Length: 388
Image (cartoon, rainbow, N blue to C red; front, side, top):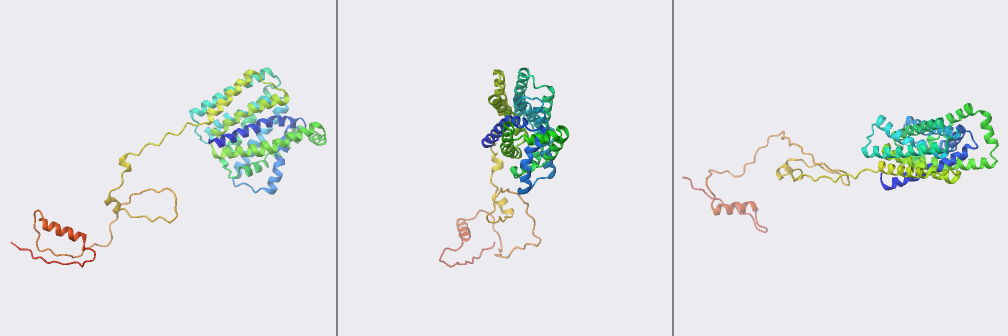
């Protein structure tokens, strides 16, 4: 990845890391599935009315919306509402990175280099260590919330593959129209699981301080995390293999743990900070490729110019004016003319002498090849050769 795309990936990680405290504020007011539906409904309505549909196959648009939008946030919001700590949620959700690499190799036949595999292994090792330390320090994150968050990471990975296959020419339009997919499924889950009374009560109590903070968190999630972050992430997935882009999501828990420490007082231990540095090192190792080897010199036998006779035997190819591109030299065998070629009669020689030419004959032959001198008329000489 070029440096500009690395900075973009870092910006996305920052946006998504801060988004976890924003989700926490939103879930204090709205039920989990309703919060997810509102997140995408705010973008879906203006997208349908004002934004043209992106020129991508419908199956990849639906796949991205179901994977990245519906599955990821249904499981994530349900886990956080069930007691998953904010920092731990931001950590476990990044299981999408190894899921993406493995699924990309299995389904899209993407090649995973040894360097990328080692970087992913180092980052996953750091994530595992952070998860173990936080699970020991904060017992609220039980087994079920962790499993639900892992399912959210799997949904994110499936969305990454759909985004990769879509190759959206306009990532912003693709992200906006993706938001139309999760709205109805999440709203249906909210009515079935949470109930109609819980949905109505969340709207009637928006005048409280909790409701105001919930709206602020929802605005950040929609405008920054989804519109800016997801749009830039989709552009990166379209330009680079998923195995190169996905490891950058492992930086999200570093930001999520830091913001949770500052906002909610979830202070990480020294070991967690050391393991977070290990995660950063694994991401950098897995996302930076080795420099390409210098081009090999062309052997003299291949770079030698063709002979004069070979150049004459190859027909000339006319190139239109102003044409650009790569030119290839193709040797075309000469084809015989369909008409017989008859030599024109020029000088009839009565008899040919053998032996070395004399000095006078050589001078006369050279003068004939040069032609007449400028300003003079050609002179014809007739010589009678004696016969034996």
